[in-house]
Amino acid sequence: MRRGPVVAAIVLSMFMSAMEATVVATAMPTVVADLHGIELYGWVTAIYMLASTVTIPLWGKLADLRGRRPVMLAGMALFLVGSVLSGAAGGMVALIAFRGIQGAGAGALQPVALTIIGDLFTIEERGRMQGIFGAVWGLAAISGPLLGGLIVHTLGWRWVFFVNVPFGLLSAAMLVTFYRDPERSAAPGRLDVAGAVLLTVTVLALLAGVGGRSPAVALPIAALGLAAFLAVERRASEPMIPLSLFGDPVIATASVAGALMGSVMMASLTYLPLHVQAVLRGTPTAAGTAVAPMLIGWPVASAVAGRLMARTSYRVLVRTGLVAVGVATFALWRLLHAGAGTSAMRAVMLVFGAGMGLANTALIVMVQERAGFAMRGVATASTMFFRTIGGAVAVGALGALLAGQVAGDVPEAVLREMLGPEHGAGLDPAVLHAAGGHLAGAMVTVFGVIAVLGGLAALTGPLFPAVQRHATRPRDVVAAE
Image (spheres, rainbow, N blue to C red):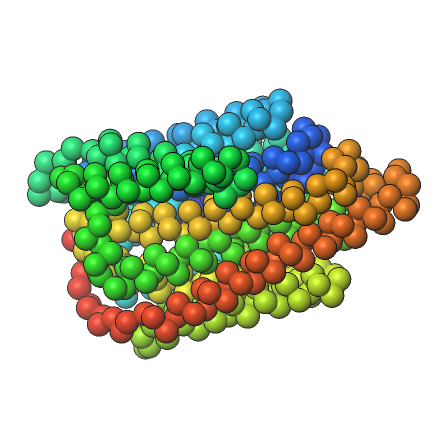
């Protein structure tokens, strides 16, 4: 096994994930204008997050039980199938369904990739590896919005999904050729199917409830599903999410912080482009570049954190990053309240991304160090599960809040015109002005909630205990060629 080509394959898969965030966010207002269904706007992202959320622990557990490579390849195949189907969707309902397939595959990409890195590199080397991954996210952040805007204007929005295919195929070919799994000392255990089903039901009901879909029914179902899931996990020989993990205060606190970071990250990526296009009447490219600085600040700060981990404590990095996230979300809310333009938003999103990079890098390394080889896959996946479910719940709930805020004030036909290529130029000026005012007020409310979530994330920083660093080598470090 050669580490260089394996890292290259992982870099390609992460580049694909990073591009997904910026390219699709850039195209979504145009997609809604074409396929209609503004009330389903949030669900195009939420269903992707839902599918990836409920499958992250499953992929992580499978990686521990069946091996990293077959699980990574299976997830990549499902992601590419969903990408192609999403590009061919003929309506919003079909697009949502196909995004679900895409999200189910995406659930494997980042957690299993990070697990492979944890297998191949020491703690010190993992810190330095963040520089490489930082460059990947930076390149995707810069090129994603520009590529997304170019594709929407020239080839059409469908091609923002098709662009994933060449990256995925090349990454899979390199993994097949150059990577082998570490040997396991025991035969694989039995997969916790009951836990997987109950977790899926619980998350589905939770997202339906917070999204305004029969909450009086959905939320009690979510509560019952959670109780049943916890009961099953206590008895399962190979639980989907081992509850013993959360007896560790580091992993427990990281899960709470991750959920809050995921909520503010995905909500900002989803609703800031909508604000730029519908309220500020910007182009799809302008909408993408409004969020792109977050995906530049993140990798740069992540690379810095990787180097600082050898000199300072994990806790300092986490606390500093979470404070930056809280300050940035508050500043973003104030900017929208003041009617500021995109230049100021870009500066704030850069700080936001830097905070995410500092905190997230230290969190992942901390969790992997505490879990050890046998549970590294499920521990990494569990941490990402809470970050993802936080994002999915926030996007769904804020979508319902936004729809309720503009219901009766902004007709769907008017909103489609505002999101179209002419940005409502054919509408009566009085109608356009009134609709823009209503939508701007609703966006201030949405980002006020995001600011509260960012503040709660900052408050989790002091809860992190001190972590003793151990300079142990991973189980299967391969000599570099």
